[in-house]
Image (cartoon, rainbow, N blue to C red; front, side, top):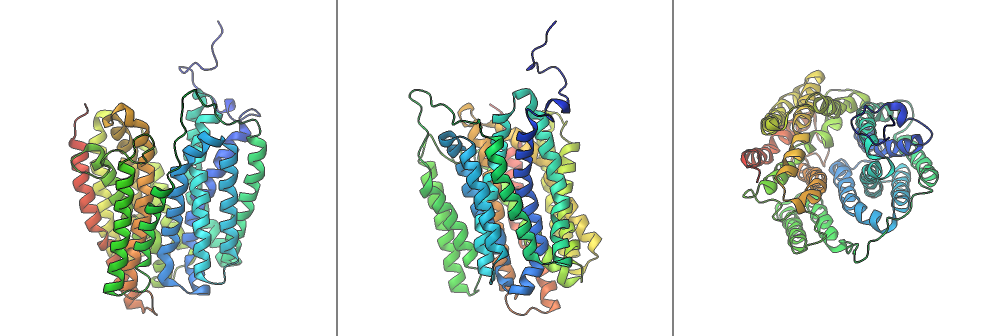
Length: 474
């Protein structure tokens, strides 16, 4: 009896995907994920050395905020670009933008130039991330997508380990500029690889009467402007100036929500995306709020660890890696939890994330380093316990016509939370004295205040969590 190759009841062997037919495509997807995932921890590890050479401690938060802006724009537009041009051209463009960003940062004479590079890296890295997930559904038959996603998940954990190692080695034994050149070279390799791996990948055919949808340039511009102005208000702190820029940023974000809500076919977010009266609004609110709580440690953690505890850059990077690694491990261990326990897992995870802020507030200024790593492990484990179930429950509660929009909105809102959180903690840190010549005592105060400053967002997030998990599926 002959069995169809697409029979889903059969176990899928790794040999079915690690072969000449699919191996090149799998390597391409994995390289795209690697460049995005490892780059963030690489830069976090190198930040103390970059600031030591170029100055600009008051701009540290911008390395995350601008990367986040680029990543949001790229991620939100990737699906539409694939519909219009196929996979090859957008993926090539994303790899080129990433290369350009790395070259700009590597040659930067001033911190501002590094930030321009980070914006290009965000556009390229965010595009590669989104397009790699699109590629999984496009380049592999359905029965192999599970193995492809398994490879991606494993690589994410490897990236969390290798990113700080690469950054630390360049800082300790060469130059931080070499880290950017190293990733630029890999991105060039990816540009070449795309031409071979996707040489037969054509633009998807357009059905009769189908419209591709207008590119949401104005909405993305308002969204980017909102994050930009909030971050800009934190450079030169004064109540009037900083307050004005924050208000302008918030108004820009409200304009984005207004314009997006007026659309029907190509909205980026579901209807009433942050209303606690709506289960989906509560889900996106908890994602936004808890994503901002990661900013204090991911933006300033390695820098403060290096200065306060006299640790090498590599140590600071690996403390941050604990967050990503524990996120991946926790997600793996709870992946088999039945759907009826989704609400419980989400609530427990978000409580653990909230408690990690208190752990940071004690350990970051006082040490020891292993306790800071434990706090990072707590935060990562909390997210890992909850994240899969947030997505699963949100999709279950979504109306049928909103399912795909909800699935794409959650990672978009997550990146928005990272970017807003970076801008917010940048204001707090610079207002506390980071922008001048901070003493060790000032740095300890900053290390205490930054995690505590994230507690209001966590409180709103917990409120949204309770609303989300108590909602009944229709």
